[in-house]
Image (cartoon, rainbow, N blue to C red; front, side, top):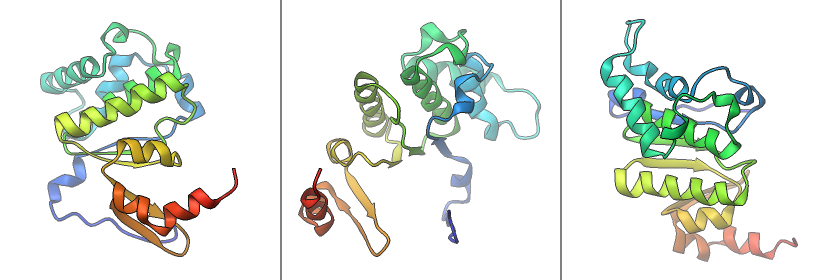
Length: 181
């Protein structure tokens, strides 16, 4: 559990421009909403005090559904989707909250290998083509090295932050590769 800490924002507006995709959890499995409703809920921070979503927010939700290839499921129940499809929908939801930064917490946990590859490709596309900063928590070092530009490796005693090549030369990487499988 977190014991202390803080996040500081130089740009006060950035606070409302962070999308978040959590790990899959049991509550998500039976969530009684359509794909469109789930994605649209990512626009909550732009609603202000209005109880209704604007036309702009509704269009943004539709665009993000299309952007992530989920248009054929737009009216389907979120609960009826596969794990990979749910993660795509939740990533579209996170995109509704931001065009700057998305935090991902183990986004591929529980997905099959094809869905994992697709999710990592989508994440890379968002970063490279849309210039969205992606911060991802993962235990999959191999995929992190394959798809990331920079690595932040945390341990109880120390940390590493740098590019992938620097990480491969670090003691953290060497220690990982020395551990028995």
